[in-house]
Each structure stands twice: as C-alpha cells, then as structure tokens.
Image (cartoon, rainbow, N blue to C red):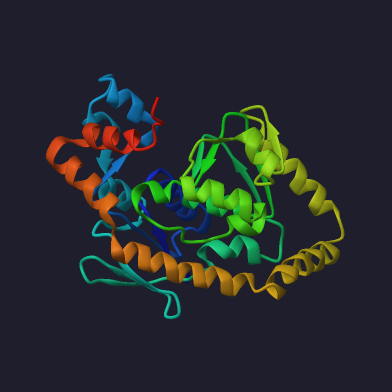
Length: 283
C-alpha cells in the first residue's frame, strides 16, 4: 500500500488528490495537507473582487468533501518535511508517512504514461503532468506553479529538467500561473495542443501507437531515456530541492503571514486585493 501526501489544498492539490484516489483505488492511503479548513476556487477570485460572488459561493469545507472520497485532510499546514525519513510534520504535531514515488511513479512506471489535461493545471497537477512521458493539452488550459506568491515552495522540482534553467527560473520565481497552452507547447511542457474536448482522444491515439509497438523495445527505450537523467543525478537533485522546500514551509514568511492576517481581519476579498496589488506595475 502506498501512502501519498499531497502538499497544498488549493486547486491543483485538490484536483491531484481526487485524481489519485480515482486512479489508485481504495487500496492506497491519500492525505492532503493544507493551511486552514476552507478550499477557495481561485479562478472565481476576480468575480469576488467586483462583487459578483460572495466568499461563501466560492469556498467549501475541504475536510468534509475530501473525506467523502476517503481522503484524509490536515488543515494545520506543514511545519517540516523529512525527505530522508519520508515524513511530513504538520502544524498540530502529527507525523504523516509518505512515499516520494506518489509523483515519480508516472516517471518510473515501466509502461508509458500519458497525461490529457484541460482547465487549470497548476501546482501539484502541473508537477504530475511533468512527470508523465507525454502530455496532451486542450486549448485554453492554463499552467503554472504559483507557490512563491503565497510564500510556499516547490515540492517536486521537475520543471528545470523539462524546460531548462532560464525558462524554469522565470516561471517559478514569478509564480506565473497563467501560462497558456501555446507557450507550454513552445517550452516543451506539453507535446500537443488540441481543441478542447479532443485531448483525451489524442492521448488515446498516442497510447494505441505505443501499444502497437514492440513492448520490450518500448520499455527498454523508456528506461534508457530515464537512465540518462539518473546519470545526471536528477533524483538526488529532486530530494535536495525538497529539503529546501522544507525550510520554506517551516519558515512561513512575512508574505504568507500578512495574507492570512488580512484574510482573517478584513476578509478574503481584501487579502486577494493586497496580493494582486503587489504584482501590478506602477504607471
């Protein structure tokens, strides 16, 4: 039985948890660690800012809805990640065991893995798509890792290995979560962009072609490609990056503290306005 811990109860984390539960079935344990007990549907934040929605209309009880699917929820946040022991220490003192392969299983699987994505592919969902061998995106899909905008870190630092250091630094250091499918294709994040609604069929077409090829040749060729990255110490680099993420999460940071203070004292709308104002250019 695998023990999987999804870091973050945002849009990407929640989607990843539901997808993992559906894919793996009830034989494996899935947990989500977030900060606070509410999930907020961030794509509706602009509507909240102009008064077209209320906070109650775009938030829900994360623990209840995850629990309905047999997913454990811990809302006290992560204080420390022990990569060597494969444990997450939560804010309320609980220790959660996890298997680092929860994400790398798609990379390590001897069979080809193909992701078909649409909508918002952010944070954990983005990293899951990166770990697959081939990714097909629908037009209109948005990609990104917004963690730095909220004072968090990257759990699986796969992006530099896919797009190179220049593009990775631009995307990760700005927290850009509005990368469109065309840019993702240009950077090599995805293999194909198709009209919305055709992404699954395109992924299945690729899967059929791979299935028609000689199975041993396909498996050995994938292993050879992966081994190239292993020889460059990719696995050790991912674990080292996870150690740095631990320091970020444990430190909290003034940005996260201020966002949470404004949210508690003035409401979510005011907190979002404060956050977004920090990224507006003067003039």
